Image 1 (cartoon, rainbow, N blue to C red):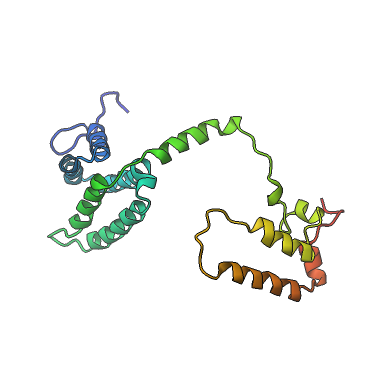
Image 2 (image 1 turned 120 degrees about the vertical axis):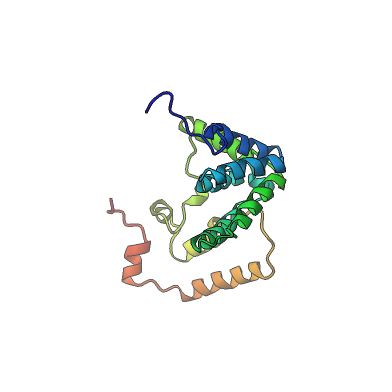
Length: 205
């Protein structure tokens, strides 16, 4: 590819500069400017590219500040795709395209997801965690070797491995958990096949 090769938009802008302007305008909540650059890309037949950038923006520049935005943008894209297939001369798919741009420009912003991604991925090779004790349960070979199988395994699973933090406090959940554990304990009658599947075999390599 020639070093002088460049993609240009309908008005003669550099494509990459327009793309950059579009995303930075959304970051700054500049609605009019966001729409201007989005429409320039639309008119230059880079419509799918704009959607791709909006999918990225939804996580990179919004993320946890508005967790539903990614789902909303995807939903609008599905409607856009359906309408675009009709090839209506009035281009009703512009509605969903425009709505997505405006929603992203107006919503609250956060770069946390992008920052945590960079920090964790860059440092992963230099980080080491041991397998936590509570991960060894009736579903793992080591857990079964530790005696966490049979009825003991059921109790351990529900009292330790199935433990959740930041509970949503769903009514009746704890009572249901107790009933399920009791039922499993009462009905537990391992077959020969279950012995092979769920119990640790010292000779197994």
